[in-house]
Amino acid sequence: MAPAARRWDATDLALVAVFAALVAASALVAAIPVGGLGVPITLQTLAVILTGLALGPARAFAAVGLYLLLGFAGLPIFSGGRAGLGVLAGPSGGYIIGFLLGATAVGALTAVVLRRTSAGTGAGRRGTLRPVLLFCAAMAASIVFIHGLGILGMMVNAKLSLAAAFLADLPFYPGDIIKNVLAVIIALALHRAFPDLLLRRVRRGTARP
Image 1 (cartoon, one colour):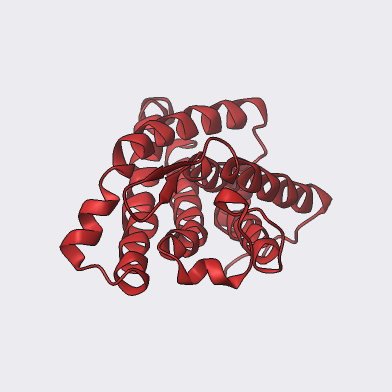
Image 2 (tube, rainbow, N blue to C red):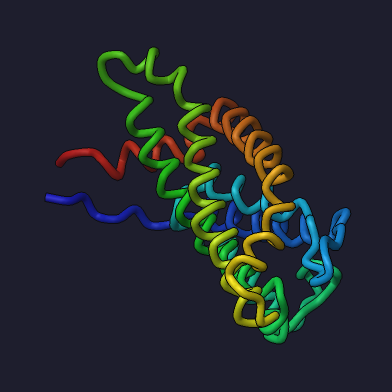
């Protein structure tokens, strides 16, 4: 019998708000336009992936979803100080939707990794694999959702072919690899400093009555 879902408390809501603010702030720092389409390189993918790694799927979805809702409502918190639903019609529109799905996906994969590496026989040995597994989770979510939807957005909004959109997306990979490494390092430090940040939730979610 599955356990009842744990209700969110004030700490959960505060974390959602803090990480939504982090994603918003990261969109406005050092935005560097790339290529003729002007899709910028920002620290946003770092913040989005870190949100999933730190909070797990539900709270990461809520945090990035809150950021998007505030931006769609008119706050100038998208890259370049943009706001409103019109950003979805631009060449970076696919990346914006990809942030929501990417954060949720890496959050779900993180919960699995923590569950598999935190308890039972051989936990110490498996724990040494945790950074590698979390990096793989971050890259998988980035490639499938953020880059995948980014390419689709350029095909739809900028009328590029698949090959052209793929080539336009390639310059973002080196930076995203570095940012995913940093996100994993920061997330591991957060989990060490605050063991209940996600690990307790994972344990409770897999407990048997």
